[in-house]
Image (cartoon, rainbow, N blue to C red; front, side, top):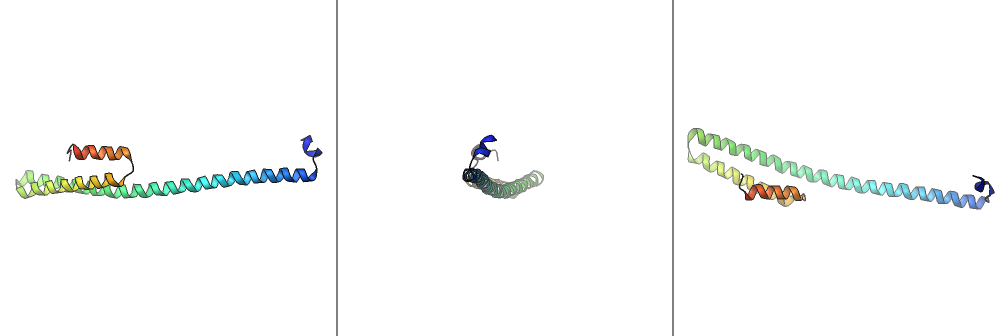
Length: 120
């Protein structure tokens, strides 16, 4: 600290100004980074919300398909089998739409596997 006592007042003020500017630059860049992270978080949350709605539709249509399948097994009527097939085709269509809307490569691969293998 001896070098500070030997410095002139002007040099001390310049040094203080340099330290303050460096502090402001660090705080500013941290704040900008925080804003960018917040934007990414909001975008991810919105995408997850859309995906959640699509998944809810898929679950609903699968439930309808199971109901039609059960009715067919109980009543042996062709109308129930056709309704079952319609519900499954709507589920496949919703899955394909979901694959087109997501940016997640693993999810796209999983959906294309399910649709192409006709697991539904």
